[in-house]
Length: 219
Picture 1: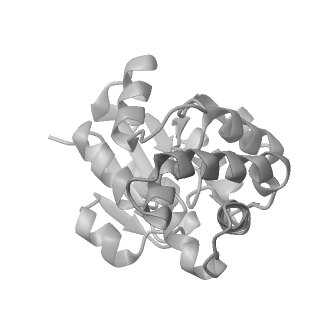
Picture 2: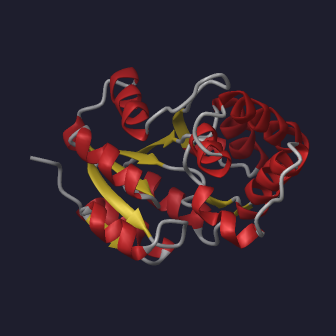
């Protein structure tokens, strides 16, 4: 594999503290009782609009938009930094570069925030490109972002692997005929990942370069 597409939340960094605190801030700002932080783990990764529709119920689009605004109010100043790079990630990224891979970030986190996270943790210099939604985008699918990366960078899908922690990363890769490596240190359960049928599942950050080198292109 010559090009590696990498997810951000749950793959490179652990954003639990910031994301769950911002969701709770949004819900309490709407006058609602917020679930405990651990009950919000399933909302780490999916688009905000989708998460708030589940939390608020369908048919409350005005509340969903207000919740997103409240979430970003806190995230912009505080929540974005309540985050941590998983141990071993910088070394694994450097190892991928050494074996001849070019790295591309593909994340559902809005592009301005994704860029700030990369810069804050000194990861941006390792990436050739970033593919993420605009702040105003809603319900963007990972498959569409993978397609954007392939087309924008003129990549041959046969020479690309997608690395992520959720089923949508695997399914988006398959839709674009890209190989997939699923990681278990993020927020997708092993059952979720196994059901998505990635080409590889790995449990250790240190296994990432070997797994990427070993996966085959989609037929």
